[in-house]
Length: 325
Image (cartoon, rainbow, N blue to C red):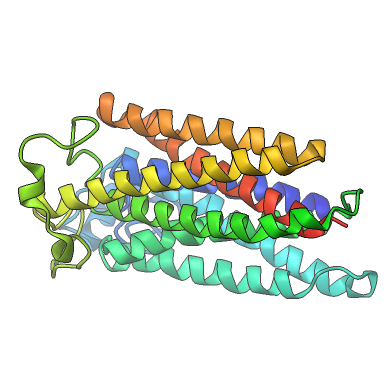
């Protein structure tokens, strides 16, 4: 059971990376149908019968590299869903061994809903709300798998220091703040606003005169949302809100890590605090690099991956504090 969960965590990380790569290479509609690609369940069959495949979607020219990116992501995501189904079956089989049952069931429901979001991403032509929800769903699946792995690892911190538990609520708040920031990043990316500002620390020109909060967080009507449907002022507002969110997240998590490090006596908590600061610093560097180097794909994908790592560190820290005897 524990090995299955560990493999699923690694696979979930790969799916998050592939999802980011698919989005950043504009391959979200590389296959305009679901679950197949141009009427075929296999990308190989699609490539073999390009003319027949194209007849299904004459308005969407077949681009092999985009279709490949999309289908590889789907293959890995489907494999993850299958593994989670196996985890649920094993949890039922081993219920007499005090294995968690509610969390695997919730994971199964979550991954099914995540599959539906993946379908709607395509059928609704990259509707930003759905794209952002799909991103958050991937992070949620990863987080629940990691929490299940921790629950299958029986450990408690010795020492009897109940004072540390009060920091648990601050770590939970940190997860909320980080999740909100991830959502802002997902919204910015889904609306192709990552390069709406190309200067640091603020946007170019009289950016403040173009702020449009109502428009930035609305969904305009469009037949297709590929490459965005908002105007420049709205995209710039999204971008600036993501930067502001990054600043708030950095300040809060830095305060949490430093305060907890000073108060902690256990080496494990101190190490987790150091890891939190290191991962947070790396994430800030990647975010700045996205602007300075005009959103290189490798840096942008790594930015997503490190955000997931940051969330896992916070989950570990919170779980450890609440498990402290």
